[in-house]
Length: 470
Ligand code: MN
Ligand code: MN
Image 1 (cartoon, rainbow, N blue to C red):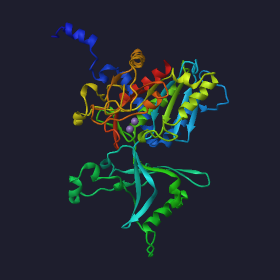
Image 2 (cartoon, rainbow, N blue to C red; image 1 turned 90 degrees about the vertical axis):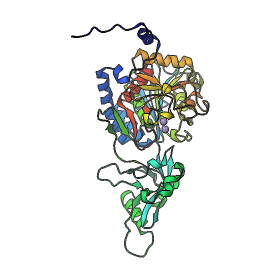
Image 3 (cartoon, helix red, strand yellow; image 1 turned 180 degrees about the vertical axis):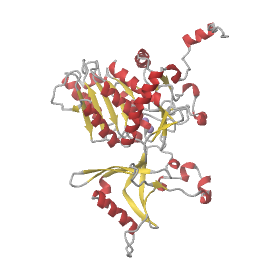
């Protein structure tokens, strides 16, 4: 015998009308949408494996863009609505633009994300021998908890520029047949001092030495025969000598591909989600944008993890210079374009972690599987160092997302006074554009394996696409 469904009480109905929904995101979307999310993430996982560093992400983006009809931007050419161009900034940052029906005359739509991730860069003089072991000295890049990096299989990625003008791309440790590398750690039996030390001192930057070899070149009396053997292998494979390390961008990153995570395969565990998990949706949405109203520009930038300084970071003029070129073609001045420009700064936020609940304020945190997270402001110590999106701009963004049924949530970065952080939103805001952060919630941010939900990745793609096309 089936019971009649109870009618909703007055307070339940009023709650529905007045309160923000607390329903888990997977229950709000259709089965087809979850399937679309899973299939979108298949190529995202592939991208993660191919684009561990910014140079590789730029190469991937340009290859995909060319296939989708993008051409290298030429400021002497005239472009019209629907034309697709890209600008490669030193192989470390890239911008893709689709010219809109109104061009730049009413501002442009920006989607910006960063393609650098925390890692262990090789020092300019990296290779040395100690007690018959060959090692690389490293200088960590970005904010890492150093204890997470020893005993993790590492791969070498990057480029070596030679004096003859050629550049050699290097990837060692990703193929099953490749060797990998590792930062060693002390055995627990001898770690009394280490285990009782303050965490940041127990493992410091000069401990981050990567083991790369142990066999001497031969049995003669020459010292550093193990180092000599490694240098000889590198010379035979790449034609490089010790001085060439100085003109190289080489780095150690966690080896291996992205993997489905959880029995239900609802999540992805991988190195470098921050911020490829937003860069990939920003890129895909730009490739899918056919003829937008306003010119859209997807910016995949470098150097965010170390403060955005440098010519490939968002403190550089490179993006404004490109907008300036597009504006000139429309008879516009940059400042008039920027004042009407809107931007989604696509970056990750910290997903609520029940194991570390005390670091979060539950009402203002973002959650895995609840969709793209809008972060009104970041910063620390009383909203220092952040652009705080205006109420009016927040209203516009909400409307765009709601009109298209994009699953979204909001979140602050952890508890007030718990620490804090920033994104590149403020550098765009400083150009007098409206900007807000929108991206994917991440567990274990900046760790060798970070975790995201497939649904959130897909909803971030949808958010960016709808924003571009509005
Ligand atoms: Mn980030
Ligand atoms: Mn980061």
